[in-house]
Image 1 (cartoon, rainbow, N blue to C red):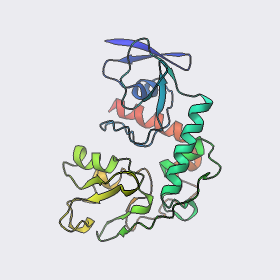
Image 2: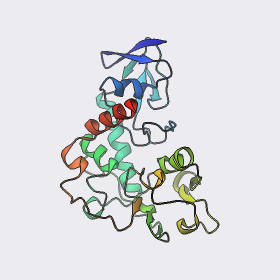
Image 3: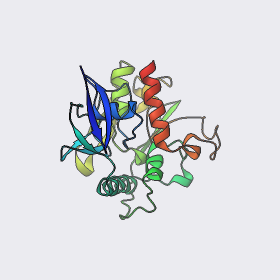
Image 4: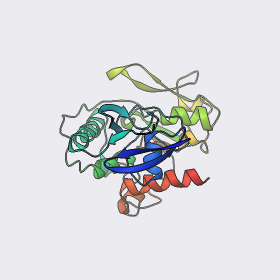
Length: 239
């Protein structure tokens, strides 16, 4: 079964089973997101992809496309909401881009550029979350975790393991490691696991690889995140 949805005045075809973001991306329409990744179970945690579907707010990464839907994706109100969400993500952790090894390859930073985020708007929390550098090849900087759940899904769905989890709610939410000690060194993670490479920020990093690609020559230094995201999803669809 196929059908058509209308996004910001553009008629877009979809196939049965596609979500709104999948149909939009296939048609070259970018919907900002952080927790969505092609090939992974939709999660709907970051809310950046919120669109209006027939007047109702819905997460485009989880909401199925249906024939005749009218979708608003690019209103001034939505762009402001997305900017505010991104600003909150910045102040809830310690995201200091000039000193971060992920700068230029960071999706959070890329989304901020795309949304023309010029300041943090809100006061910083300056959270003091621990770093786990116990593993010989991988480290976790909890200060940069945005709870997108991608490492959790990657470990379960791609690696066949259960290394990561999210515990707590609200301000007490935290990324946990499922190991006897709670440390990465005692978990099943391997440097080649998808979960070790999926993080959209600098929360999970591979040791001894920093700055191999100089800042200024990285993916979002030259391409808007919308261009990169559309190419990645379409490449995934061809695999």
